[in-house]
Image 1: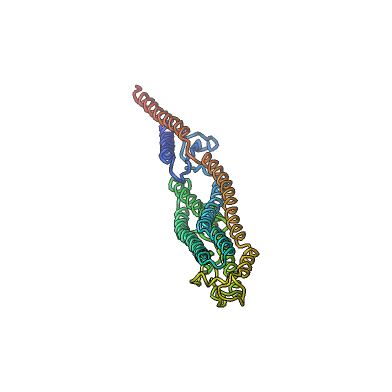
Image 2: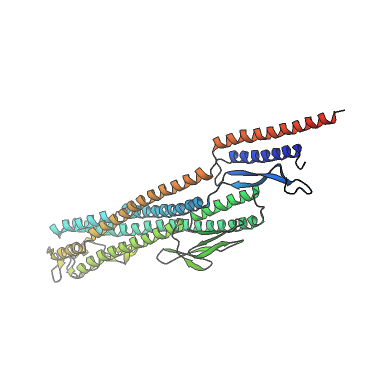
Amino acid sequence: MASDLLSIAASGARAARAALDVTAQNIANASSEGYVRRSVSISEVSAAGGQNRLGDISLSGARVSGIDRNADMFRQAEVRRTGSDLARANTELGGLENIEAAVEQSGVYDSIVEFEAALQQLSADPGNPSLRAAVLAGADTLANKFNIAVDSLGAAGEGLRFDAAASVEQANVFGEELARVNLRLARASEGSSDRATLLDQRDTLLEKMSGIVDISTTFAADGTVTVATGGETLVSGGQSAALAMTTAGDGTIAFQVGGAPIAPRGGSLAGAALALESARDVQGRLDVLADQIAGAVNAAQANGVAFDGSPGQPIFAGSGAAGIRVVATQGSAIATAPAGSPAGSIDGSNLAALRQALDGADVAGSANGLLFDVSSAVSGRTVTRDALDAIAASARISLEQQAGVDLDTEAANLMRFQQAFQASGRAMQVASDVFDTIVGLR
C-alpha cells in the first residue's frame, strides 16, 4: 500500500517535535519586546494509490507546512498611529511645561508689579532719595527678570533641539537597519523560523520609527516594506533616505528627507517643532512687553526733568526682552517733574504721566495674560495627552491580546504536542512489533 505505518508515525513525531520547539520559543520570549506568538501549520501528506489507481488517494502522514506569526497588520498599524500621536503630545507637553516654568520662575510679572508699586510710592514724595533709589532698583530688577526669562526659554529650546537632533539620528539608524531587514526578508524562505524573526524585527523597527515621525507603510508579498513620511520615501527595498533637521534663526526647526522638505504630523519630531513654535511666540510677546515698558518710561523721561533740573535721560536701553537693560545710575535721574521745572522740584506731574502710560499699556495685565495663556496651553495639552495615552494603551492591549504569548495556552500546547510525540513514538513501536511478529512466522 502507498502508506506505511512507520513513515506515518515518523512524520507525526517530526511535526510534534517542531510544534514543541515553537511552543518553547513562545514561552521563552513571552516578555521579549516585539515578539509575536508563533504557531506551526501542520498539513496532511497524501499519495496516489499507484499505477492505474491514480484516483485512490491515501494518507501518508503529516508535515510542517510553515511557521506562522499571529500578527494582525491592522492592529499593528493602529499601535503605530496611536503611538505616534502620543509621542507628539508627550514631547509638546514637555516643552510647554519647560516654557511655563521659564516664564513663571523668572518672575517677570512680579517684577512689573513691584516696579509699578515703587513708582506709586515715589509719587507720594517725589523728592525722597530712598524712594528714587527703590524705583531705579526696581527697574534694574525688571530688566534682569526679562533677561532671565529669555535665557530660560533659550535653554528650554536648546533642550528640545538637542533631543530632536538625536531623534533624527536615531530615525536614520532605524531606516538603515530596516533596509537591511528588507534585503534579508527578500531571501528568507516562506514559513521559516528565520523569516518570522525578521518580520518581528521589521515590525519593531517600524514601531520605533513611528514614535519619532509619522510614517505610512506599504508591504510587499515577500514581507518587505516601503516607508514614507510627509509624502517622501524613507525606506524602499534595501535603500534608505536620510532624514535631516535644520534650525531657523528664531529657534524653530524644519525637516527634510533626501533634501525635500516635510512637515511631520506625528512623533516626537512634530511635538518638538510645535513646542519650539510656542517658545518663539512666547519670546515674541516678552519682547513686545519689554519694549512697551522701556518705551513708556523713556518717553516720559524725555518729557520731564531730573531732580537737578537737567533734561530727562533714558532709563532703559536695548530692545527686546534679551536686550533690555538699565543705563541710569542715580535715582536723581528719574524725571518726576515736567519740562521747565527748576532743580529740586517736587512736582510729580511727569511721574503721574509715566504711571498713566504704563496703566494705559496694561503691561502687568499683558504679563499676566501671557502666564495665563501658557498655563492654559499646558492644561489643554495635558488633557489631550491623557486621552491619547488611553487610546494608545487600548490599541496596544488589543494587539497584545491577539499577538502576545499566553502562558496558560502555551502550557496546554506543551502537553498536547508532547502527547502527540509520544503517540507517534508508540505507533512506531507498534509497527516494529507487527513486523517482528510477521518475520517470526514459520
